[in-house]
Each structure stands twice: as structure tokens, then as C-alpha cells.
Image (cartoon, rainbow, N blue to C red; front, side, top):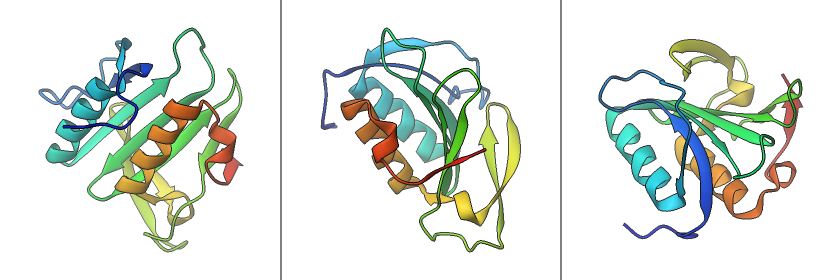
Length: 140
């Protein structure tokens, strides 16, 4: 599998495909290993990832997804939490359950993205380190 940005270092934790649980064990690898893990979770239909840049605790992005729907959180410091505005895959009145760590959380369709769009945003964040330029973030 070819991944644009291969060789770029990233820190991450993710749902274990075997158990479906989130062990919260941080890893450091290049983006290719993260992409492989994400695609394995996609094949299982759901997962949760926390992704940051090496040598920096913040910003941190989290991506939770189930089926073709996802939610992205931005942690810009220990107390600043934001949700990325949705892309229209769900209507504003919809309530969508998305895995966050080991639990399902309900989100308004206002914050739901297509999984492919969420992965593209996460991938861009890893390459640029600039989450503020990735869309409209709203305080959570």
C-alpha cells in the first residue's frame, strides 16, 4: 500500500483490531503503519484513534468511526476540546452513535463526517501540523 507522506513520524493509539478494545497504548511510527492499522479497523467496521505529532502533547486529533460515519475531535490543550463540523453525510437532526475509546457516544449530524473525509483531514493534520486550517471547529 502506498501512503502519501510515508516516512512522516506520528504518535498514536488505536482500537486493537483483535479485541475491539482501546488499550490507550501510545505508539510512534511512520504514517504507513498508522494507515495500515486504520484500514484494518475499517475492514472491521468501527474504531477509534488518537493521533498527535512527536515531541508535542498538543494538538491531538481523535477519530471515531462506525460504518461510513465518523467524528473528529481536536484537543488544542488540556482543556480545549473542539468538534469538526460535519460534511452533510448526516442531517442536522440525526443522532449517530460513534465509538469513543471503548464506549459509543451519540453525536448530532452537525458533527458527522464521511469516514474517507475524516481520514483525509487526519492525514493532512499529520503532514501539516495545522488543525485549525482543516475546517470549522466548534467548542465541544
